[in-house]
Amino acid sequence: MPIDALDGRLIELFTAEPRIGVLEASRRLKVARGTVQARLDRLARDGVVAGMGPEIDPAALGYGVTAFVTLQLRQSLGQGHSGHDPVAARLAQVPEVIEAHTITGPGDMLCRVVARSNTDLQRVIDLIVDVAGVERASSVISLATQVPYRTLPLVRAVAAQRDR
Image (cartoon, rainbow, N blue to C red; front, side):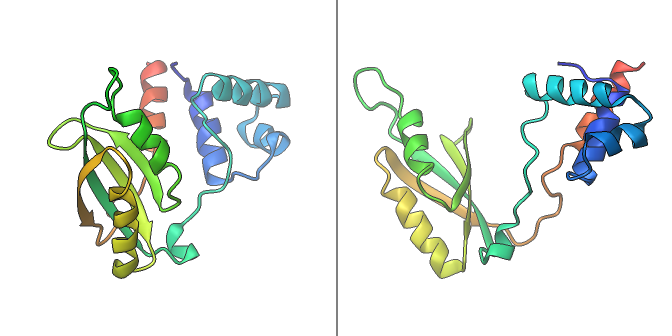
C-alpha cells in the first residue's frame, strides 16, 4: 500500500514521539485532528503501522548477548506436513527467541536469540535443539549492532516516490 508525504511525516512523528497524541500531532503537522486519526486508522488497517507499543531493549532487561542461530530442519514430518510451522510454534514458546524466519540457503530457519551470557546462550541453544524437527543448529554471536532495526529510511523513500 503506497503512502504519501503526509503519511510519511505522520509515521516519522509517531516513531520519534510515540506518546504525542492525535491532537498534538495534528497541530505539528498542520492538519485536522480527524485527518491524523483517519490516516493512523488506515495505516494500521492496511498493516503499514503494525503497532504503537514501546521498543524493548533486551540488554536493559539483562539479556546482553545477541546471537543468530541457523537451524536445519527435518524436511518432512510425515503426512505431507512441512517441518517449519510446528518448529516455529515450539520456538515461539522459548522467550529468548525474539525472531524466527524461514530462509533460503544452507539453513532452513534463522532465529535471533538473546541470552544473559555466553553460558546462558548455550542453555538457549540447547532448548532450541531439543525442539522436535530441529536437526542441527549453527550460531554466531553479535559483537555490536552496526545498523539497528529501522524502517524510517524506507518510509521516506516510499513517500518520496509517491509524491514524484
